[in-house]
Length: 245
Image (cartoon, rainbow, N blue to C red; front, top):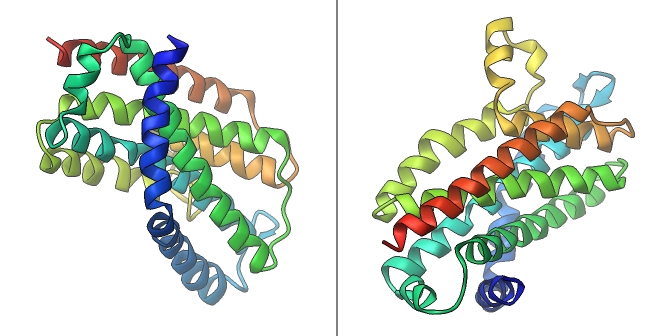
């Protein structure tokens, strides 16, 4: 299984390495705009829970970027399936379904981590001082695992890029703005808070933000991310096996 996983992962990394000079500017534009427009221009004199808005915003952007970029591996899978027919070659290779999913998920997590590093560099350039303990990166990796697993599962279900866009528009984009990334959830009505509590990004944002403040994230956040991630990973393995039929 390990050899199959590494083969799938290596292929994705070779593609990423060839595109990295284009990907880095692409990963940089949105976070930079958010930091300038929301964090610096609008939130310079705003405090949230005793912290500056910039200190509040950067962990939210980290959570959002790790979600979006991890889920972005679905586009690579779709291109490989619909245009290059790589998935058909993997079907013929001695690569198990679990190994294939693990390789793609690891590739999505790598993309997410690189995008997060760019945001942390921006935070340093903007003079934001925060803590980055091990639990900070554990939360990032768990969040990216959740959405990379979801990406593989959805990539096996959709029949075209248009279908993939629908999933992004109705699931990923709303979650990016409602998962505690740009504003504290306690400012919402109680019913909205309870609803958004079920989103995995909400728990990722809380865990990443708590760790960046030098606090210990709640264990329930890690438990939710682990449970949802394993569920999505199992779904991905199941849908890969169905796609082979």
